Image (cartoon, rainbow, N blue to C red):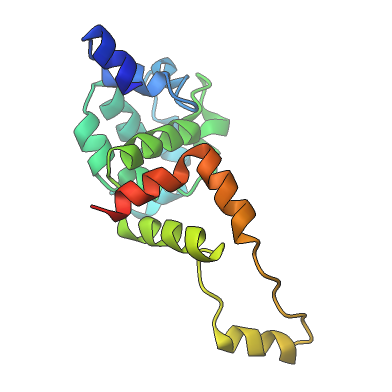
Length: 171
């Protein structure tokens, strides 16, 4: 997207950038009714996340505030907002689009970066401890099979994820 913008020497409004991304297509349909916020289990327990506010800031072009903050990372992807939106705004999908933009621009919570590194290295987000391996055998469970990291790396490479993660790790 940035290359197209640079070629034309035109900077699209942030809401149009979001709308041009997979998952962000419906953002402009929002008329700020608040159904999403009243349906959101995360918004009920913390004022740090309000899907209505995230959408509003995005529509107003407050890109830096949206992508550099932690709000977009607090969505639990329950889809309550999306199921109840009277305008058909795919709010959880918009949040995914915003996360992708944030990630591409270097805004990612450290825990997600650690997960990504572990996924690329071991094929699992969390390393399986010796304790867990022993516990599996005492419960009569078979040992865990290797993850097939090479196949996973090919998939992540095909999607460009590996390059984004390397860029993130070098920061």
